[in-house]
Image (tube, rainbow, N blue to C red):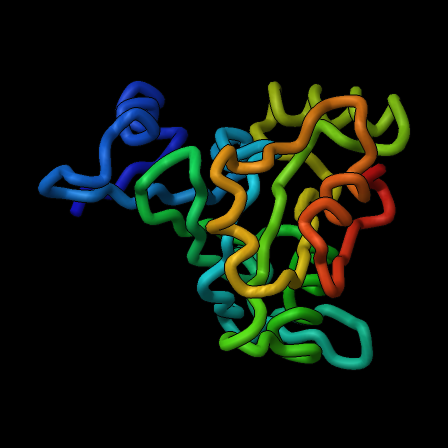
Length: 192
């Protein structure tokens, strides 16, 4: 299996997106930084596993982590944009808290439900937040705001979205959430 990091070799990552599932080796795409995550901006993803890292927890609504130099959690994802296995790392406290709420507090009934996410740095409520996000992504490779919208949907929702159901600019996120018939959802306050 080949491992790719979006920042290491953009050309190779693009080949992963174009590859077919019938190939001998299926690559794994690693998303550590926001610049790498931006390859999936606005794409619907199925979360198959949520793993808190290095003792990161949410207790009484407060995120705590004994190690501040590593991500809060990792996600195993599936996305129609690529047949590659995707591992994404969560680096924002609010995104981690929302995912914790789904997987550790509410919990998913795997026989009847699935967790879906959108990662986006293009749907902020206020123009100034969008400008700051764009600037930081371009210069630093990371944006300072939360970016993950988390939904709990009926099992099979992801597979039924053959076109991927990507976010479309100018429309409110709730249009897509309600279109997916989510049972619960978590949207960061800064996202419209």
